[in-house]
Every structure is written in C-alpha cells, then in structure tokens.
Length: 436
Image (cartoon, rainbow, N blue to C red; front, top):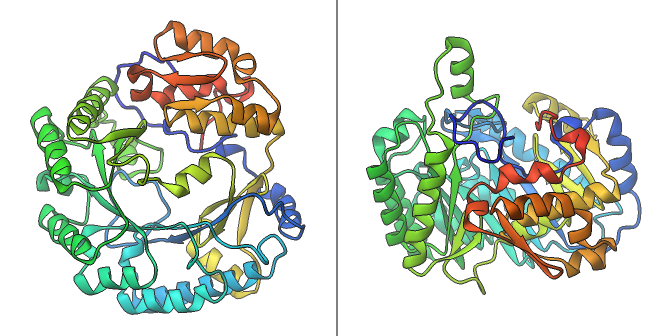
C-alpha cells in the first residue's frame, strides 16, 4: 500500500486486527487447535472469553460482520441453548479447567438485541460453567435503539463493567443513509439510562467518513461526543471491506466510492484528537481517547494485542489459545447443528511460527502509538530495532515514527494512518495477500 495515499476509499480491508492474514487460516489446521485444547496450558497466560451475539435490528450498509436481522424469539432461544452447550463442552477441555477469566467481551451483531429475560437466562446458564464474576472487565456492545432502562439495569445485574455504545453519528440523515437502525434521540435516551444506572467505564463509538459526512457535521459530532463526557471515545475511519452492502453496490452498479477519501478522514481524525485533547482526553491508540489513562483501560484489547488466550464462543467468533488462532463456523445453521450434535464448532485455524507471533504482537501494539522494546526482548529474545531495522528506518525517514533501543514512538502523522504502516513488517509473502 502507498503510505502517502490520499485517494478514494476503495474496496478492501485496511484495518489490521491479526497476523498472519485471515485468508491463510484453513479448515485442515483445526486438528492443531483441538490438540492444544486437550493439553495442559501455560496458566501464567491470562485467559478471556469472547461471546458473539449475531442478531441485529437492521444490517448497516458498512457492516462486514456475520449478522442476522430481525430473528424471532424461537431462533434466539435456540442460539442461547447452543451457547450453553458450547460452554459445557469448553468447560470440560483441559486448557480451560481450573482457570479463571480475566476479561469477557460480548460482541456482535448486537448483544443488546437480547431482551432482559434472555440476558438473565444467558447469565444463569453460562456463568455456572465459565464465570466472569472475577473478571477485571466485562464489555458489552450496545445499539442505542435496543436499550431501555430495565435492560440497562439488567446489564449491571449480570456483571457488565464496560458499556460500549455504538453512536457512530448524531446526524439522523447520515444515520439513515448508512443504514443504522437508530436515530439520535435514541442515543441520548440510552446514554441517560447508562449514566443513571452507572458503570465503571462507558465507551462511545464514532465513525469518520460515513456516506454524506461534511466538515461542519463532523465538527458538531466531535463537540457533542465531548459533551457526553464518556470515559472512552473510539473513532474509526470508514473503510469498505468486500462483503458490505456499499461494496456490493459499487461492484454491481459501477458507482464511484461514496466514502470520504483517506486524506479527508485523516484530517477529520486529527481534528477530533485536537478537540478532545483540549477537553482533557488522552490518546490511548490510533483510534481511542480516554479521560484517565490510569483507570480507563480496555482490558480486552490489551490482552488481544499481547497474544493472550481468548476463548471463542458463538457463530463466526475468533479465538486464540496458547499461540494458535482459530475461528468458529460462520453460518448460523451450521453452527447450531454442529453444537447440537455435541461437537465444538471450529471452522478454521492457524498456528503461527514464533516469528509470526512476534510480528503480530509488534504490529498490533504499534497501533497503541508507543511500543517498549524490552518486553519483546524478554518474551521473544530479539531486539526489535534489529529485527525490523529496515522498516523502522524507512518509516522514521518518512516522518511516521521515531525509535531508539528502548522504544518505538509513532508521530501524529503515523498514528493517523497506522494501519497502512503495518504490512511493511509482515513477512514478504504476506504483504500482497488478501487480508480476509
């Protein structure tokens, strides 16, 4: 990728969340993850849990996740029962036994699509098998229009410590044009309920570059976000993975990309950083700002970026155990039938080499903007500045970062386009491979 690209937002995945690329994960490698599950683990590695809830009121036009719209209570109950069965099977494998969860993440889809009754049932069934009561963090993604005061109270009751509210924009015209299910009045009502009930951490998400975004509207959106005074504000720069509604329309109708170009999105991101820093926020990564760096930690992300164990549960969910990547079956009916037949629903896997694990942890932590070299020396027995000398020198000359023997520090220029920098650290054969 051209690091200085300022062109249109073309179809493709730019946001790096793992390595080696997902396209290299294969079904034939699943034997290895099954072997690992039945071996004694290195229990010094922290372990967490990811629970995928694939249901949504409506599919956003920019969404690339495995989601299912407007499902009835019968289907949801069958899914919750399958999750319970999957938990039962996982709780019996050696890699999980006698270990506690350090973190839990409810992702989607829309976890808050579930009713209060369903959420309580889910907690009752699952927590007896893999309890998150002692976890340092339990994150729950919410779509504003699915919340009411009773449900927010239920979230507190089932042990949620970190709410992530998918705001994306405060402009109703933009929300409708991009296929969001909620409108701005629902954002403010939901946020009031969340504040009324009270959680240790609240995050809100924004997206820079949605269809129809303007300079004036973006400025107003950032101001409104700052006024909400959330503990964390996460801002994504819009991209167009292959399987989104927008991408399909571009390919089928031959239209020009309707998403703001990269130069504009980076400018908007920089303006947001400047505004939020003036309000007392601190940069925690290339797309996250926090009020208090000491207390506002995203424990799930910190563990994901450091190669720690994450148990995957639910359709299409991703996991990582004792150095092995894996993903569950990505079609709902396949997932349900497999679990109902008493089998773990693992679809594909990959065991990275030691060098690939080094690359993975370095590029992911680089997204935080600041990497200390000593932990890598301790863990992998290598000096980062020697291992990646060519890429580091190239990117230092281009003004993206600075480095010495103790640390690598991204500049603001580097932070604004950090994902475009990361492939230079990949092994050569993976630099031009399709990412997903």
